[in-house]
Image (cartoon, rainbow, N blue to C red; front, side, top):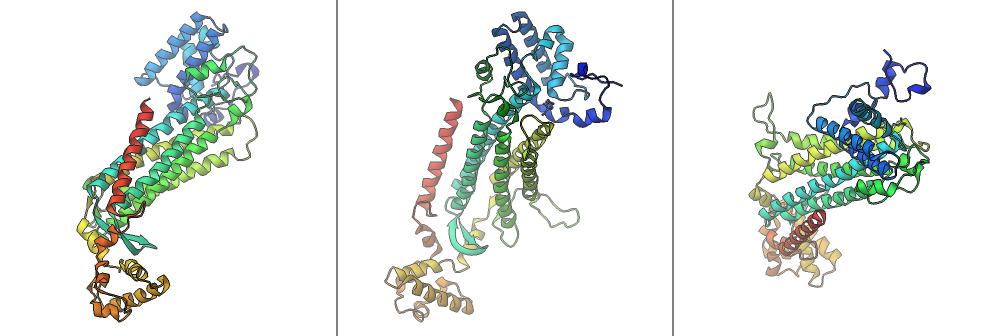
Length: 467
Ligand code: ARG
């Protein structure tokens, strides 16, 4: 069966059915229908203002597009898969509904600038949605930090106990990753925020169009000055997927910690039942399945990034059909990040924190050793020598099966005559934490200041969004 194509005039034969299906993107780009309709309405309005179509034709186009949008919203319209893409599907439906005026909509436009408009509008909104979700997650993490503001747990380097820190400090480090992700999404949004409409196929158009007019109507901040660049640039999509990949990277790091912390060996947290699963064979099991799945899904978003970078590599100007492959990965990245943000938000906000277990773990591991060395250094011992003294003290304590704070003054003095009873006080883990008063350190005041700063920053960025 011959299928009608928009280029029918030039062809004597019809395209192979299998190839038509191969070339179609409708199942993927269907989700661009709101952007496509907005773009077409703005284009038709401009054509009317410029006297290229009549006001009546514009009105008919507007009504037709509006009725298509209503039907799509109410799921009352199913496109046939014989339509190559969302642009052709809407245009053919428009012509079916309003006849002749529908055929004028495509004057001074090509699907090359049309698809770029749709995709840019989508990315722009999607980037700000991602930034909003990330802000919510940051706020959620800050709330958990406030609820456990003075809980102490071990801080690690090389996965070995290093120095005790506040759980709130640790959680604030998590949210800091998302602040950077927000900035990346905002930058991706700014990159998308330029109108390619009016570039037509690649070279512009002889029709007296007004590109400023359509850019403004669609809410774009600027127009892309070069028509060839306008139809071939997809950097904004790479920026978006890169931001998504970085977000997944951060989510996977956090999930890794949630998984470790919920093991019996750590026992720092218990994930709520709503965010855990059991085993079909081992009745005792409670698995951090969803945290693992987030960690696993990071790979697919990296794949989306490599996919688009590879599609664009070596692509000559201007539009090439390769570019049709730009959308699926971005949509996948969006859906994946959206689902993972929501999962991690839920996990963190509902987990229970086993503060006693954390403190107990922080008492071990000789984590006051640095403070003991600092104590000597403050009393004139060269830090390198102090390090050596405390190293030997730790070795001794380890052999005795004692913690540093269980050593007597006499035992300490075997290693340095400088030690006095004052030295024993710095071994208290709470004091070790409280002593980290440097800017950004883990003392309570520093954490409180960080919380206040994060909240103020998120609030002020929300005010910016409302404006
Ligand atoms: N479905 C195409 C895409 O997503 C739309 C643009 C097609 N343009 C063309 N000249 N074939 O890239």
